[in-house]
Image (cartoon, rainbow, N blue to C red; front, side):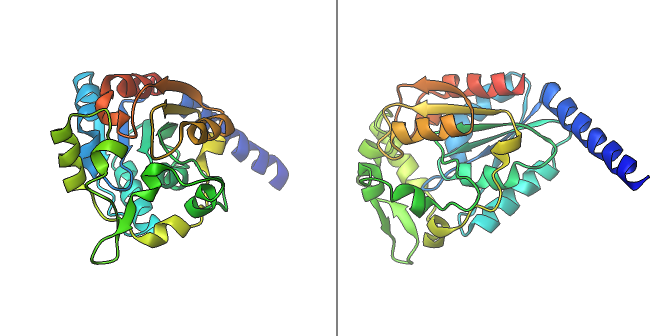
Length: 247
């Protein structure tokens, strides 16, 4: 009897996951990366909102992986129905942890890390020569990590107007250095449909590293000729991928 009941419960759970995946998502939750804040998603959010989606931009504190996951889970708890969970850069680590939520229909990675269980960013970054962008990361006076403001326009946002890039540099939040050694405990991409936007002119996360992540998670992949700030410089293209994930 117990065996039959367990089988029935597993079948019901599987049906629930299939139903969530099949339904069109009206909710989009956007998770920003390091050296940024939630305003980095403003252009994408405006495009998706105009198309009728309910869009939430998570304000990650960047104080720890646990804090960022908690902020993202709070945003997911507030959603009603199927949701597309989207991340840029460091945010990929966050949605890997939070994305197992049953409301999450699919995951979208935009120039983002996609670690597997047990991996850390420092381990992933140690496989080759640091990128020019990674070399521009430094501690501020309080010991938090920032992207050197003088280097930001050329290395982080090379395809944006100088004034816009400088504004992004000024609004960036410092990251806790411990984030780079935080161990991924969940890799939600194993059980979800995945999408990946590769930014082929990226000087922070090398395009080949992004292609590796996209291939490993079995993502539907789109490449755009953009910097690490492709979510801003090519917001229409990024929004189109998110819309496809929602459909």
